[in-house]
Length: 328
Image 1 (cartoon, rainbow, N blue to C red):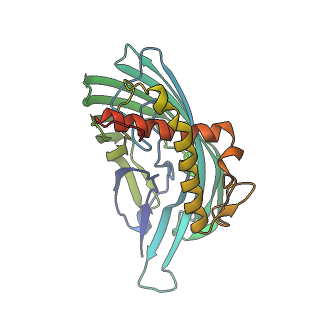
Image 2: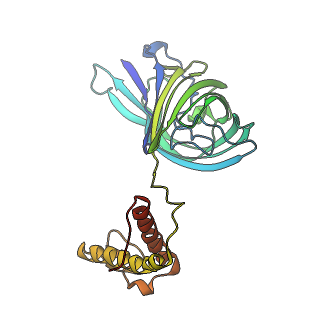
């Protein structure tokens, strides 16, 4: 009988993609040991004010600029065991960790506009799964855990920077503060080094990352986990409306903004009603109810200001393109 153990991470994906490659080995069940000391949490929230959803930015924070973030993530089935056997009654497949809910408090500070240091403290509030026997790898009761994970220290050195390009090296380390027996942390400290390249263009910015995590080898039944290669990419859409800051509206045209703002709202409301929406005390997409389906005069000043801004920017854009607006 042989046992295959798989550690598969569920990473958060927005407009970004991050992945890692774990070094996994095989051994026979008869000679297996079971250290069980490794962290199944594969998502590490980026630190700093310019970060993507799942990837750090190559740009450093300004000197003495502080950043603080609380990020929560949920993993489904990150650790699964499959038992392969010529005897059907021994073959099995089950999730050691089925659910994991973790929050991470991360803070950082910029230094000299080129460097950044940060600290992240992860806490798992909920973990459920099926424990296994170190003798044969079969399910052996329930697994339940909660507690502190491995504290993470991060650094950043921005080596090259321009308006459209940045390159940085990011050293880091984790401390073995989590309970590895419950898969909340590694058995020893780990070290990492990542290289990040970032491109900042007019309508989007993108980043590419590659790196390496060095850790002491550990064995969970007959699966060996060791050092990890890292790679990732991220893309972020960056709205780039036409710059109209230098356009001044003549008084006779400025009077049009309120009329256009009202017309903007009326067109929006008509389209909503045609799509089956109706008024409701709060927005409910399932019931198609919206509190703003009222005459323009009944809107709050905040809602009116949204329509006024749209109308004003539309007029300014027309004028900035060289057109004239005249009343007949």
